[in-house]
Length: 122
Length: 122
DNA sequence: ACGCAGCGATTACATGCGTAGTCAGTGAGG
DNA sequence: CCTCACTGACTACGCATGTAATCGCTGCGT
Image 1: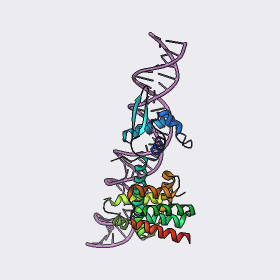
Image 2: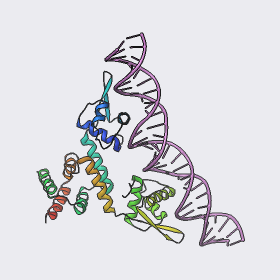
Image 3: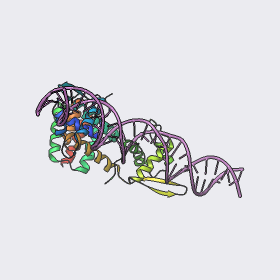
Image 4: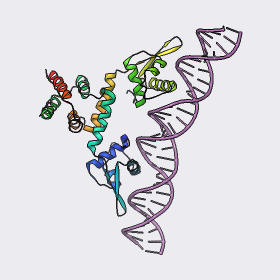
């Protein structure tokens, strides 16, 4: 039932996942500089995230402090699953294969994933 | 420079990647039944994909036949890259790790990916 | 010769999103 | 006390998207 998080909203979530609870102003300060958002834009996004029930706010004197309600891990796994289902019939191997074929997976990637898989087998 | 392909547009692309060139009607027939689209909806989507320059049409008597201009492989790699950049700092390993941790990668997946990686190393 | 069925093109419309301005309340400073 | 700065809430607005109806053309059947 967790509502869809848009691209811009996701940037705000990343800030809150990194550190929370934060005030709206603190969030605005921490948003990556390349999106040069006005403070109002950040407040709008916080409002929409509240409406979507993916963050909560607790009163703190004059203002609110915002904090995520969904774990980053849940979100990223959900998004990854959606992509893998949509593009690769739900199978992980073709994803790796496509990237490998076109995108030059590094030797380091290979080593890391092999180590990871070895661990999983035990 | 390839324009963004939306979710609904992607469903149309999948049909054309599977088989092409096709007429609008043929595309409509092949679109998965769970999205019960009117023929008009499919035609609108084909028009938008044309405008985005990701498909082309060639006249065939009364009608057009549509055919993809971008390869499926290019598209899926692009989308995968975008997700991995956005959620995992561009590294493939954390994706695999997250899925493994939460989503029970199957033994078969592990075997397949190991085989794939072994091949890549040679 | 004429009307109709089929086709692409154009138009429509509600919703979501990105981005931001404005409003109303309230606590702090003079 | 009164004003002002700050904060959250509300409003705005243009563009993308999902979904579809309507329009104009033209060849086929009669």
